[in-house]
Length: 72
Image 1 (cartoon, rainbow, N blue to C red):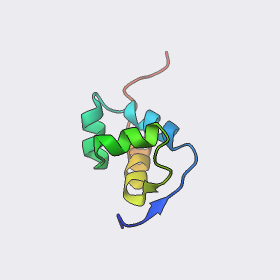
Image 2 (image 1 turned 180 degrees about the horizontal axis):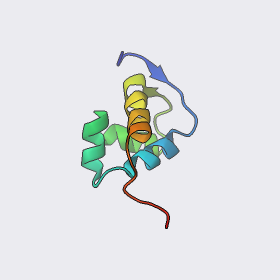
Image 3 (image 1 turned 45 degrees about the horizontal axis):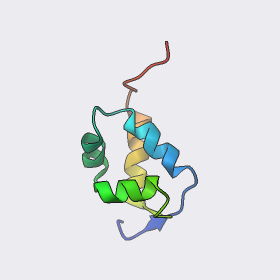
Image 4 (image 1 turned 135 degrees about the horizontal axis):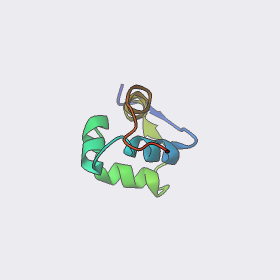
């Protein structure tokens, strides 16, 4: 499925929220199987579309994990 790409609105927000579930960027990237240059390309708007596998893993992280940070 990694050949498929999607254009999702709010992917920067999705990456940001997912990053809150991890102690480090490396841990996040290993979990979603994304290299660092691709991650920064998405954050900086240099890449418009994201692999379906990456989107799926990001959604899985957000849906199945408990946040490390809580509003008190």
